[in-house]
Length: 493
Image: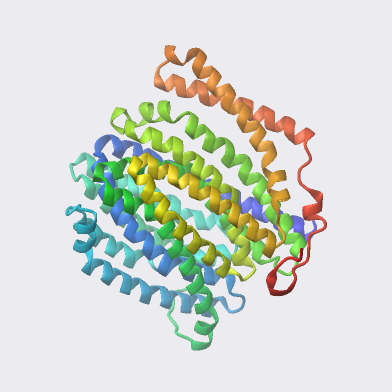
């Protein structure tokens, strides 16, 4: 088997394993969420969302950079991992102290005094989670995705095993906090064991100088990503009641589970695969094109399906008290669909040693997001969700324009990747809505969900199969005759 085919197979297998593990873990988390959502109040979810906001900042600063550096750096893995672990522990400890000290100030900002204790508990989570990315990065560098997913599945099981009994016992919001804390501890222990690396610390100055600039760039990208991703949470928490933050958190969590998780899983396989092809631009583009085609064939129908079936899904699964989340899911589903179109372009920038491009795109995203989301908040939480859609549209266009200039991947590749799933998705949505219009009023919410989902899935599979046989797979000019990179990393005109 030729080397490109072996790599493509490894990437497809890695993406499948990553998402299978991610999906398995999230399905367990989803089942846990259903039970907890029925036992707890939306306000409890809002309080924990504030704690997760703090934890997300730590993951960007102390985890993302160290883990990515382990994957990216060629050479002595033992030394790189030891330096990365030292960096993550130092930065994680500093972050935990800052969060613990300013917990009450953060709670006051959100007008939620009950959140202070939750935030302090998440400071402990920071100490436990900081080293995890190093061990996960070792497994990702080895492309050992089967071992890499085990801690994630175990964490999901622990969350349910701890959280549900505590919720039944009346612990309220603390059932969510303690279950998350326990899951992080178990996940860390498993990651250490499965990595096969004996942990040690080192501040080797030569290695530190080699990986720190890259790690800092990735951390900066991650921090900007958190600012972009969590800016809506900050605005919702600041402008509205904690209960509304709970509705928004549930809606976004579902979108993240079903759609954004697919993008993340594809990234876990694409990044190391692309990193091995930076010296062969034609092969790099080919690997990316195959990955994008498969990704959009999955995200398009799932995202639109969530938008179409949000009402029967929420009412039948979560109950009437979560009905305010329905319009939020319908709007955010289109945000996720658009987001998926350009998400994995970032893997190319990282793989080719140009993470600064992601930094600048993220800065632009953040500058754009602030005023749009604030203006949207005047139309309520749904206005903020609509603002997310507008931002995703702009950023996706910018991302593809930049990719065309820097790597030579232009709109023709995107069009060839998305046209078949787009045609199949449109027809599947029409069929699903037709079934709902014809028999929806005579069915329970559960049967309505089943009828719409079954019809949409059958039509999508059938139309996509026909398109695969009749429409060409991709633009040959974009892949077989790629433009070589010119000076300063730009593709010539």
